[in-house]
Length: 117
Length: 115
Image (cartoon, rainbow over all chains, first blue to last red; front, side, top):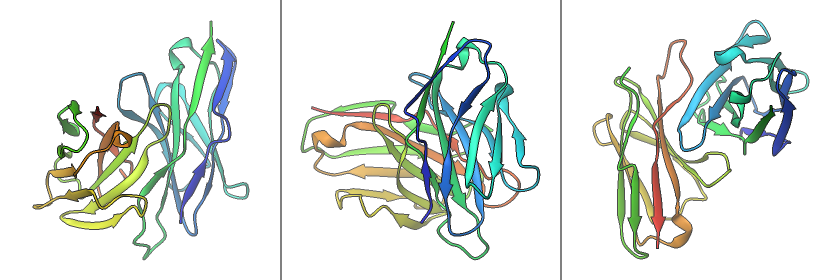
């Protein structure tokens, strides 16, 4: 069964500094990986995804993520943090192995990102 | 895309009552998901559909919970004999089955409060 781990409950970063939010995953087959963001009292918004190809994927609001197959990680990054990036971030995985019928999307517990002015 | 629509947005009910939530997915999205989210936590998988077929229901889910997607379009989630522990945000999401867009698109959720 697929699973996702986000080891940090909260990450604090000063505005203008680079940020990293960590995610590791476990699937038996071929992973599709996603990052979502949730602002207070709002639904989940899709940020970016990895399906195949280049290990570095770019998404909305200047975010990017790096897929590392050997470390089974998909860390979210941004070169220069903004106060408005403060939110709850979720990593998710979908097992898209050919013939696999268990391809539901599973989310991590989330990491609260706090950007300090 | 008109987006995923969930109704009602808020529901307050007394313990022991039944409640039903509705989700209208993005048109032509084959997959429809239901999740439950409590404060500060990640979405917990409840069940999902491919068209009208329910593919899986979480083993953690009580028999009081049932979901349908009768014509492969909208879906309903019913909770019978609600308990205070059912208080949470219930999220619906949809995604296409094929093609490049494999991510799920979420609605705003239905916040359930059981008193």
